[in-house]
Amino acid sequence: MRTINSPFSDNILTVNTRLAQLSFRKESFEIVYHYFEDKLPNGELQEFTSTELDELNQIQVHNLYREKHRLPFTAEVLETRQNMDFQPVKCLKFWALGQMVTGNTKQVKFLVCPTES
Image 1 (cartoon, rainbow, N blue to C red):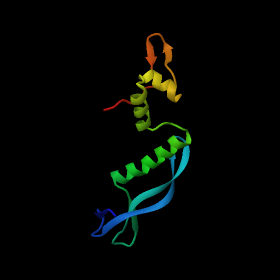
Image 2 (image 1 turned 135 degrees about the vertical axis):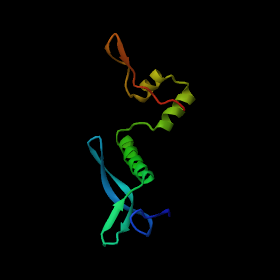
Image 3 (image 1 turned 135 degrees about the horizontal axis):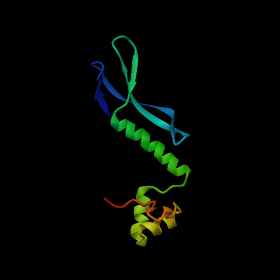
Image 4 (image 1 turned 45 degrees about the vertical axis):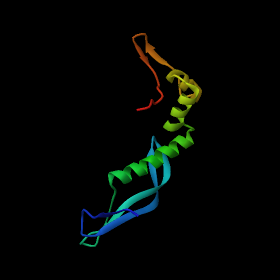
């Protein structure tokens, strides 16, 4: 398991986990929340995360949101585009993500599929 030196004391810390509710787009999702916990010199417990753990926790929430709303993952969209030789507009229709939206003739917006970097 990953360890770090505590920024608050001389302790070596490991990653702890617990079930937690996180909100995303006005919905609550239960995830396995990852964090560090340190006992400070005054006896208090300090709970904190690193950027890496924040990203891990957020990825879980985003994945649960995608599953709940049946949204394709980026890898699925890219694979479909490659296998079926779809252009972004066709990709939108295939995944039923939307269509071209026009507000007026000067402004045209597209909901776009991700492209390879």
